Image 1 (cartoon, rainbow, N blue to C red):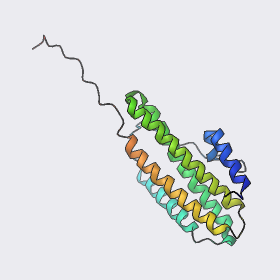
Image 2 (cartoon, rainbow, N blue to C red; image 1 turned 180 degrees about the vertical axis):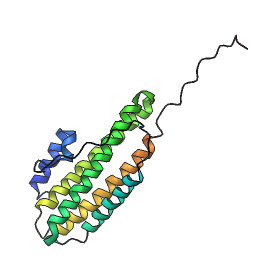
Image 3 (tube, rainbow, N blue to C red; image 1 turned 90 degrees about the vertical axis):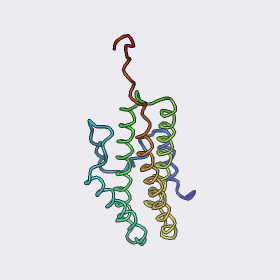
Image 4 (spheres, rainbow, N blue to C red; image 1 turned 45 degrees about the horizontal axis):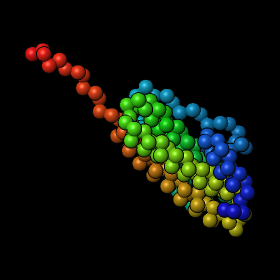
Length: 181
């Protein structure tokens, strides 16, 4: 990947600005903000799960794209990365809403998990940049790197959603008056 100066710039920009990894400066329109949910512990809707499966399938299809189909592969990669960005934003929002109910250990684990997800997202951004600007000779390596990085981030995100949902303090028991019978 050292031969891809633009991808390195994307990673450096992403590291300097946490939200920048989600968006390439050349994108036509910014991704839509994730929907706000009153119930922060809500499970993804069946439609959301269907969309995720479709995005996963599109990413897997990238493996078969030749260098001649680069534009289609890049478009699918962009859509897949935006979907993961949306999921990460929802997870951060849910974590923020539960912050006051988390104990110190859970807060630390939450911060470490989100930092790991951002690092993985930066790696995905680097591979995405490589897909956009690689030579035909490097296409196979870049394509495989993106797909692998996508699946690693998606798996880590699924694990984070499961783990961070367990990090709330148990509800406090109301004080009892021992003099009452």
